[in-house]
Image: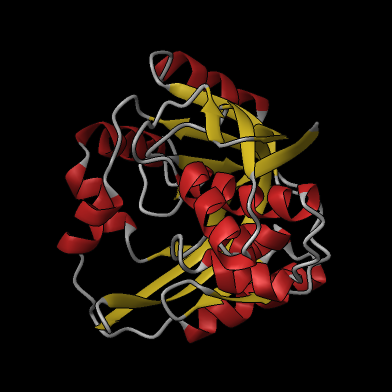
Length: 273
């Protein structure tokens, strides 16, 4: 049996531009975090997902079918999913599960596909799936499928993730988003420099998310949490299309405040990798 950890991510930058070929162009800097789903693989006579909470629309099954079609291998797999990453959270748990299914099958069947081949294959599953083939800090361009690893000497950062119990559709967020034509090239450059030089202040000063305003307008629970933290002078950032938000290196007092104020929401303490 093969076990893999499918790590979640947060966004340090998310620039969303005009639509091209049906998709928004993005410049998206992501970093993996220590929160993960666990996938267990073993050869099987068909494709079977144990603990399948997305029956009929499971990216693990789609990834397995794609792998066997691409490699022409006449095989199957039983995948046991131990789910820890919240769904519809902006943490890309599904994308990570899909990418790690491709990685797992590549190992299980000794297919010797390169990372580049796996990233190319991943693009058929979703825009940000390719990031999770390597799960290292990267900037993703195009519609998110063009992955370029970034040099990073950043120390591990303590995170507090806060997700309201309500979800938020990525499709809905993008449908309501309007590009204002403002280039974020300077912020992106500064974030890349911050990662390379381990400059935490420079990083915090330049984190941005073009979808944050739209996401906050679509989810009242998310907006309440975000506004409450801002009113208390606590820096909070939105990951992906939301609704999960995160605090960087929060103090013990800040963690206590969040646990008291948002005791009915999902709070997860973890770290950047």
